[in-house]
Image (tube, rainbow, N blue to C red; front, side, top):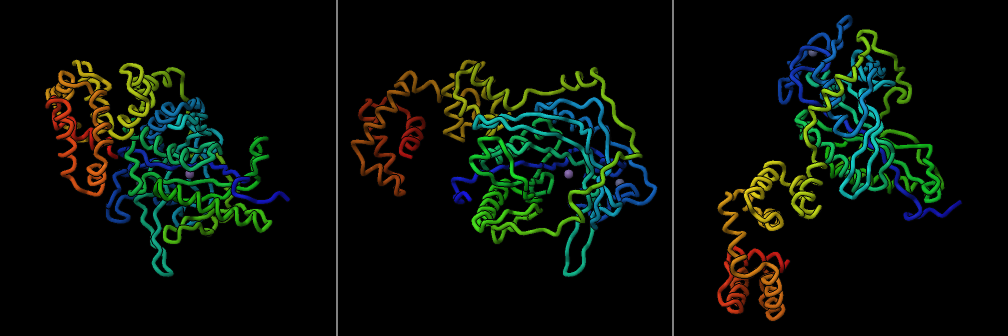
Length: 439
Ligand code: ZN
Ligand code: MN
């Protein structure tokens, strides 16, 4: 057998992301979907309690919002879609099945381009109902049905990720897109977005041949991006140790223990792989015309990845700068940037100021204009940079003192620059630049 080494084994990672949509009502009943911090079991009805004979009626708004998300993520919309029953037994699902989608999900395919340039393939996006929330108290389990029946979107990727950086970026892009479309809050602390990672390892030879392993371990219910990264790394370690013993990891569900930093086996649902799916008989199949789909496409706003590319093309800023503007600062700053550029400010200088000097985010046009133009008349930014570097080289002690916390050293360095330029530099322009060059 081939020697097991960390380098020889490669990660194969697929993701399942569950998220709540923002709708007025739950997925299949008239109950309010505003459930956050409401008294337990105060927002329920026969449908979402799973009482016998209650009839589900699909929420049209939830269907439409799922389709919008699909379009934004490059999916094609299924013109013939339907709901299915997925059976399993668990206290948080008293009717014995979850209404979900199996063979004909709302959205198929799809791709997301990540900051690394990697393109992540989406397998499908479907719509389902969330289950109740269980609390374990000693040997008792308490149930709150407010969450039962909440509209829940599930995004399933292909097993395309080979590192955690891309996987985390993918999840962030999904969260950003949902917020951009204004179809959900996807607040992970409120359980509105939950992650699952399907993890296996394969040898380099298998990777070259495009072969997958015949097992995967599902790490369930991860509730932060950071924990996802940790859970995947912990699981890689664990699986490597199994291989090192000459064994194969078994296919199972595991959970991530945030305290120990390890994954632990979970009580498996009855028989995880046999959900006995069949079409939900109480809900007729859905048919979507081309006309409907085309109208929906018109509702799509300009999306983050498009905005980033446009900022680079139209204003000549760097892609790294446009990523910071769009992803980190958001549309309020992007809109301000575009508005001020159109009024005549220099795009490169303004982008650089927004990124390096956070207080500029609150500035008016006039303040920006003064700030960006004053040094122009006096000394050009590149010349100033060169000069600062020269002064730093000639005064290593002052630089060292500043690094060690002596704030006044900056004033000394600034004084040297004033002397060199005959006073042609403004402190509120030069001092931040000195600070940024020291770091
Ligand atoms: Zn209800
Ligand atoms: Mn699901």
